[in-house]
Length: 356
Image (cartoon, rainbow, N blue to C red; front, top):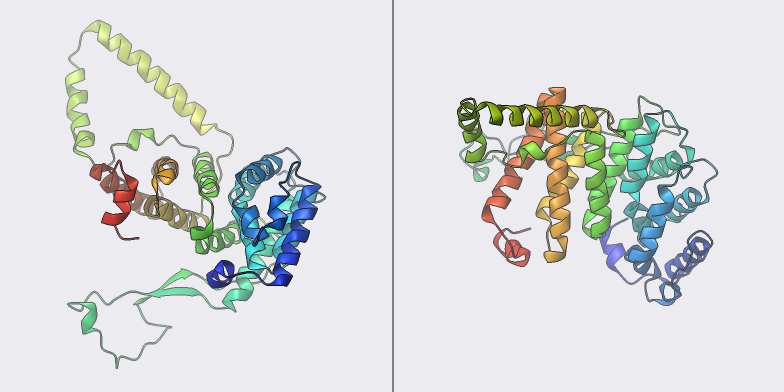
């Protein structure tokens, strides 16, 4: 699934398979435009057709959508197994909805064999692509004055080299989804999604951000002023509020009751799931792209959705007292605060100031 292949003109065989996939999909999704099959690149036309995508997303949210005999899950599985990069992008486009529904339902131990078959197909593809190798990045030695002082003659030993950071560990093939493997398998599919995120429609990214808020199960609105002076001044204002009159104190108590009830409701919110690091890490990388990958003013909605998701995940990390998650989500909130402080109303100007 190379980006070059996805951007190149498809071969006649790829066009034929894409047309066949669209024809099969027409029996599941009503009112598919005939223009999709007749376009020069049917698969990419399907990928960016908002009407068809909305219909598929709605079908994936139905109560029995993830069952083993679900025809849409079978179509997604067969389409990804076609090996055509453009068609595989179509399947990846719906990964946020698939993982979102799957993870929220699996908490209630509902069978999701259809979703699991699709996730395993994506996982197997990534496993084969890595050939048993871990994904790593080289970090400059901070003991040197600059990266230009790195010694080219230094022998790098991967087993002991502290400058080599593992982004994703090597993968083992799995034929089933067990509870102990679930987070790792889903996390790897999200890593695959992240590697193709520049080709994903904005709506797909927004869907993932929305599910992040559901998974977190926390309200992050209290962190809208994260890192600002207003946040630090809040404690002083709270001290002054203690001197208010009896009438104002009663109003504050009522507000406190409302806040307490809201917190209880959020804790019981359906959809809250465990967020181990192997699942949270690729999510945070995707959210980082959503914050920084703005290309035009139409993606302002994506920026807002990613902002809400980051705050909710930070609130969840604080609630769980998870140091690693707190550090990572706080870094995204600092980035978010810096972007908001610039007050870029024109997001086209934003991309000219910050190189992407």
